[in-house]
Amino acid sequence: MKIEVNGKELEVEATTLKALLSELDFGETNVATALNQNFIRRLDRSQTSLKAGDRVEIVAPRQGG
Image (spheres, rainbow, N blue to C red):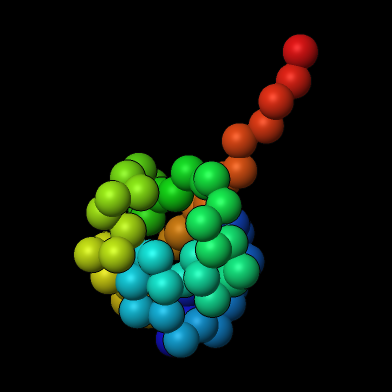
């Protein structure tokens, strides 16, 4: 199915947000996620279904000074 991830259209097999992170090699990396501009908690990712046309944002935290 085609979805948008961080502004880029991708063809993916994943049907949940957790599976998408795995498919994109994020694994257990500490990231923040949003689906269609709604923040999704880590605990909810495995139950968050994806559908064609969804927009996903994946953001890794940064340290700085």
